[in-house]
Image (cartoon, rainbow, N blue to C red; front, side, top):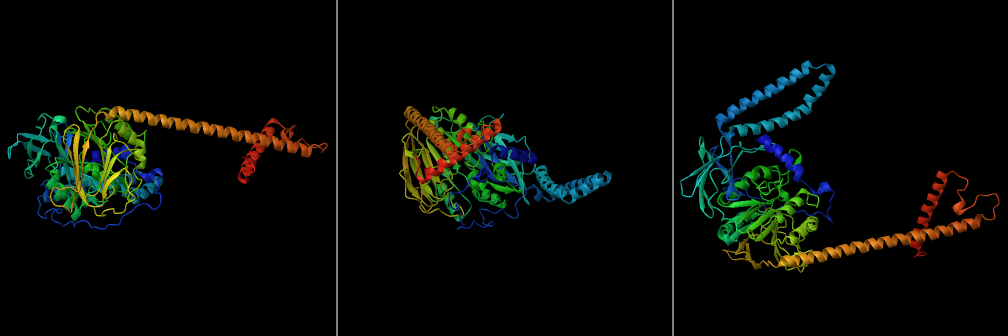
Amino acid sequence: MARALAGAACLALLACLWLPAAQGQTCEGPCFQRAAVRPPLEETQPRLARAADADPHAPEQVHLAFAGPASYAVTWVTHPLEDASLAAAAQEQAEAEEASVAADSERRLAAADGHEQLHLGAEQAGGLARRHHRRRHRRTCDKVVAAAGRSVVQYGTERGEYLHTVESREPAGCYSSGSYVSGAIHRVQFGAGEEGPVPPNTTIYYRVGDPDRGWSSERSFRSAPLVGPEALPYRLGVIGDLGQTDHSLSTLEHVLVTAPDSIILTGDLSYADGYQPRWDTWQRMVEPFTSSQVWMYCVGNHEIELTNGVKDFLSYETRFYFPYRQSLSTCKLYYSYDVAGAHIIMLSSYSPYGPSSEQYAWLLRDLAAVNRARTPWVIVVFHAPWYNSNYAHQGEGDAMRDSMEGLLYQHGVDLVFAGHVHAYERNRRVYRGKLDDCAPMYINIGDGGNKEGPDKKYYQQPKYSAFREPSFGHGTLDLVDATHAEWRWHRNQDDGPESADSISIVRNPNCKPIRAARLAAWRAQQQQQREQQQRLGTQQEEEQEEQERLLEQGLAAQRSRDHAGAAGQRQGGGAQGQGLPGEQQAQHRGAWRRMTRWLAGFYRELGLLA
């Protein structure tokens, strides 16, 4: 499983990973960087720490995710190598493997001739040692997986009565980065097999673990209603850039009060930034929530980490479950799912998104397949905002907006959530920078509580920006029915469920023909502009060629006059090359043509030629 996960991660990188630096993009002016102003909580903080006497096989970091219609995936972590007996057996196996590798190298060296011995000796001193280092990490993960045991979930609709038992057919997962080796990552999908779908809108009691080694404590969550407008109302919670600071804890405390049915996180989860133990502490911090309600994630820039010298999303992709195959995506970084009366699309700001990209093609297919009678609300989530009046990360989403905004508008997306900027901003319905009552509403909510602090500096407020404030908090979206929703932003400094900003949102089903007409008008205008530019360019080229022709004629006439009286000398102008071979005549004409073009430009700069 560990090798499979590593291979899958490599394939995912080839299909998904794209970094602006790799494409030659640069910042306009100084690149935006923040200094940490709020240190993360200590790793020993009770909400983040693992008990020193914890059972190695005790499940922790439990996390729920949607896995398809009436099905869920539950993920948890154990630490089997902390079991002394298993660790000793694993160590013996590792030593035996090391001895086997060393013996094999010695046999190769002894069997080689003199030239090959020199080559193999250098390989043993350098490249072979590096490969052994990688092998040790891989073997360590292999040991974790081998010692992980079984992955089982039991669940039912009454406390302590587990009517269904589902065991994963796949071994546990593991990954390594530098000197860090993860625990065993267990995952079980339930509700999609012989056990049948999970009952909708029901409290589900469950436990996870290994029947031979022990179970977690009992957990519970409320299953989602059947998909359709009759399932409404439904409350979505929206958090961005959460991190693990005291502000993060405050945000979570406020989430307890607002009590959403499920959570969307718009990217930048743990702010581990390559220090892998911070993924463990973050998952422990949020476990009381992720084990009792579904959290679904969008990828952010802080999920890009350096793993053994390569930038990738290995930690993010390995630790969490994404229903990308169910939504016919080829990449974990962009996917969609249905819940209640909403179709929710997660996009990647850090994967190729141009018209020729796989993400663009997938988004087009996904939007075209939406059934508005079944999911009247369409919500899109990505990390880098397209509309942002804050100084922070200004313009970083523009290229993606230029590529994809037309798709969202054409297919009637209702709301777009983003993070990245550590402040709250609610924008009005806007399309191509102009207010449009049939366009999506854009909301930036990267204010979850991260270590970098709030972004307080704004540009002059544009017309499309309705409300903005650099405070920490979270949002809730109540989908009331097929046409009405209520959005509220809850600041951490406020008590109770009160909101600092709110708006009633009304879907207009009649917008479809209006959008089509506006898109057609815009495309016609773009085509007209292209044709005008083409005509103007052609006219300018013709005028330039005519000026060059007249100038060349004038110069030729001048050369003829200068040489007319010189008997026995070569004729000027067009006759200068007479008597020469055809190739040389062509060279002469080319040289004269280049000279006349240069003179034309020179005279234009002097104002002597129009």
